[in-house]
Length: 156
Image (cartoon, rainbow, N blue to C red):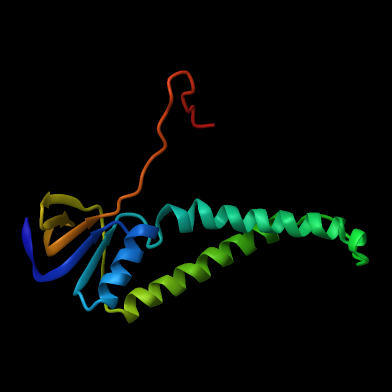
């Protein structure tokens, strides 16, 4: 394991909603900040969970409102839903938010490290064969749903 040449005031393990919020706040407070993320900046919420789901739901709401428009005195016609276009809308929404978040991280001079990090001491994270030191280490690695006895998740 090699030591990273730099030491940070704050090292955040996890680049999802909590992780990037903490990293941005740390940088805003003047802390030299690094963030380690194994997946994509923005985490599950931005790429697979909250945001894509809300984009798809929004498209469905638009279709429903168009069908009910006449109740409000608005004449509109509803032909069909073009799922390829809906998927493109969802993908464009996610991509735009990801670009914006990436820009914020760069603008705040946060060191972004892609890779699976592991807490190796109270003040260090091991990632990509390097040890990243921080005066403060914040764990923001997300969570997984818990299976309840008798209600096991089968993956479908």
